[in-house]
Image (cartoon, rainbow, N blue to C red; front, top):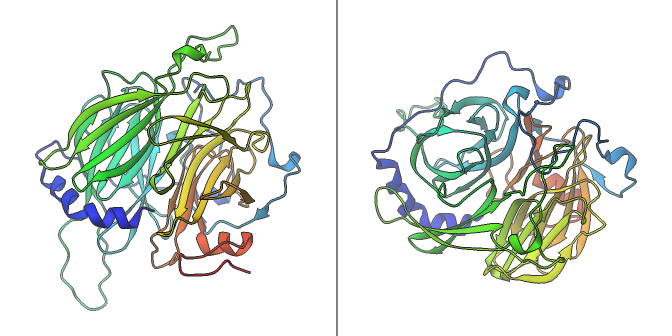
Length: 421
């Protein structure tokens, strides 16, 4: 999605692959997994509810009952369903050979699941349960920047950084397909001394050899009689977002804590945070507010952490604001996509990048109960104009061809193209 920035730091990031950190290659995918589209598997049962999850006696909101205007777009594919993993969030690595590899966090599987980004086939897993490098405890948010993957772990209270690479190229023989799959290597982890219940994150380049990582922290103030977590009082919400700086000059990234921010006013505070995404061209951070009591929507902050006084979609989001993604062009134009997490079929609202004007909404034929999303703008063989990925019901990931989205909502299919229709 940030193709220009990725290219600019690719050579710097490539050096991370030579680290001496413990290494664990992707393991073979589990055999016999049923396709998600062949029948609805039972949702994964979590050992501990998230702050945004409803209790067993609460009614899940359904798009079928919401009467909201939208376009239906069929998914290009759904990955194999693994409900035992509790899939949370996806991200994509575009390998040097142009192939897309889709990584998804498995909260209960304590691992990353790896799929072919063009076909959806499961090709491997990385990690196991534990607290060391290459190990995970309830991984949720994930982002890929260049050849680095950043994985948030709620129960290890940290962000783990991994390098992505391909094995040595095979002999270039006519008719022989390139079957190499990603190798992952854990480089470092950070945040355990400050993060309390981290969830989402956004990564950007701040110089040729440094990255900034902003992590949302969903710390709570206890539980009520129903077992629901209670958001802290407003004055304690000034640390909802934590900021770190990574220096990329050495074999392993160096990490420095920069500070925290969060509005403490009734209108701008983030009571239940998860997803966050930024747009440096417009000095903007969009942060999902998932608290239903005050109104789920998306808050508009500046990059330095100040609430702009604007909340997007208040009253428009009916289920729960979740994953956020950005489609962008060099002239400052583009589109935001923000998820409304209906149980039966998730609704994806599209907003103008600059003005934040609502442009329409779409839903898939199957994908529902979506947590994380990822928009891969740099194309591939199957998706030449990009692809939008969305988690399906804690067990799989669905893919939407950007050309289909653009056609349905009269959007641009590429930065060079005029709106469809």
